[in-house]
Length: 312
Ligand code: 13P
Ligand code: SF4
Image 1: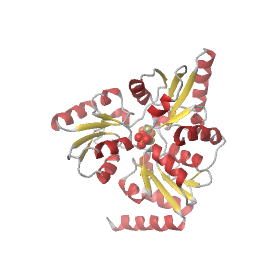
Image 2: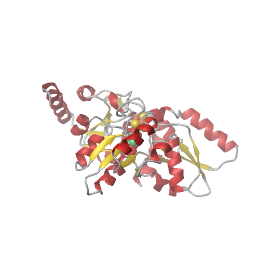
Image 3: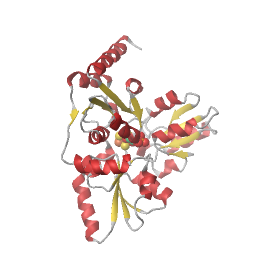
Image 4: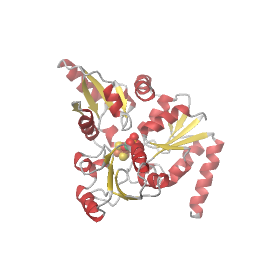
């Protein structure tokens, strides 16, 4: 570690203790942030971990909808984020007023439906929903939607399409996508497979069908860790998800070799929103108590939906 890095890491540790803060980080954060965290996880385990935090402050290293979810599920805590502008292309693709108009149009046409919303969405969209799902619990939640209701699935059309395939339920799909998972190059994946013919491909369900169909395993980030951990023999894995996930896989299950599936324009595919959180901004938010995620009127209704969906 360089002296500058050691200095900032020490500063963060000192400030974290001074502020009595718990640091939660998503698996897509840089390794140096994940290393500092009290808890790393996928969206579902982070939401649940937020409810268990005992310190007065949570510092959330992830994107905005994740920090918002932590605040909603544990409202008495001060929730800080290194960069409040760390957004998500999926959340952006589904503005609440547009969803409300679409739901109204379906109702006027006599359609009976439940809105099942991926957690990668704003609190205002969650407040318009019957259920919130993550890649970790989506299939279980879909089983809870009575057969006589159609499912309006928002905002990720690729995850929705995958869920249609595995649950057999047809869905009305919103036309959103993740800017990271959508741009894996199938040509490069096939070239990697030719180079490493014994390798297994693991893909996130936010990937389009042309990547999923070449994958031995499809699952969310936590499920990926469980999958590789079950394989005893050292194996090559081609990983079709955000490239920082490799740090977590190498850290938790180091006996395997992991290769990032490239994006169409880059050798490894990183989320620019997650990348807004840096060690410097993490230090500054601990030092100043800003930026903070503050309670919004739509959080009350979003809380009911989140609790029903993720905690029961
Ligand atoms: P999970 O970690 O829940 O699999 O979600 C991935 C993701 O895209 C988060 O933005
Ligand atoms: Fe959103 Fe995709 Fe980034 Fe996840 S990886 S935060 S879904 S843009």
